[in-house]
Length: 362
Ligand SMILES: *Cc1c(COP(=O)(O)O)cnc(C)c1O
Image (cartoon, rainbow, N blue to C red):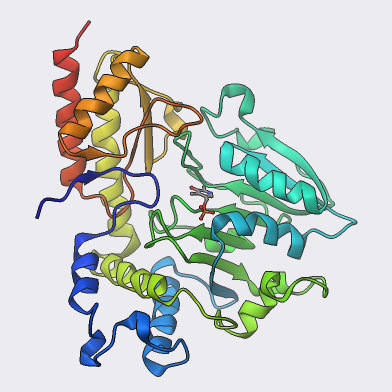
């Protein structure tokens, strides 16, 4: 069997060990004669996986006891709507920091629910960087401050977060959760679709401070009210049981690798290889993000011309490199190097980039 070098932005690479494990018990989970997909979500077997995933995520990310961990559906995109519906009251305004396409989408949904404003933006800089903290604006009537920790499309990332206890920060961490240690207690809510760093598509993780539940309005649809999912431990309705099972395997794999700090070191090594390749190419490859805002998950770059980019993508694909085309909204190239992408894939890509450069040097 030949596996490709998978640099997809999402859904993306899963650890081979996890896929192997899932395959080994696909037909008969723990010799019980059924796939885990065929169990009732009320069975003790499923409950164990569900609770295990919750506990392991808490352990790996050091989530304090005054936070809830939820497994929801609807992707990060449904969180764009649920957040203002639950937390933005008519007397308040929601503060959005705009660092790329996903934060713009989040803002658009909040605008449909209540009052919003933009407390900071790097749009004028073509989203090539994260704004300086000193330039961010806040107001006393902020319901919350929303940010996107890693900008999957533009390849930028917040390296640290504003430490401002009087504000409630909410972060979309879809594309970098579990990639590094996190100051959870600086956030009221963190959310992430699983399909980048946590598992397959179909489950969305929400980490929510308990005191956020105090002022939720009473007339929300049941499924859109965070209290429903807190009360029923994410089992109000049928959860995406297979996706949560896969999440639990990815979390176990992460723990076996040495946990978040070990993963973070490995990610640093991977990131360094690619950015060094870009920076060492004397301008043949140019990184799209400003250096201090560069993402450790999505490495975005250009070649000297669109023709060369097209040729690069074509030859890369022939060599087994998948998913290197930049997002359709901005073009260029992007290598997504999430936790599950092995360093060997990154080294192979770097070698390919060198070879391509020498072949087409102008
Ligand atoms: C992929 C992504 C989303 C969208 O996630 P869905 O699960 O498809 O709704 C939102 N935000 C960020 C930062 C992403 O990378």
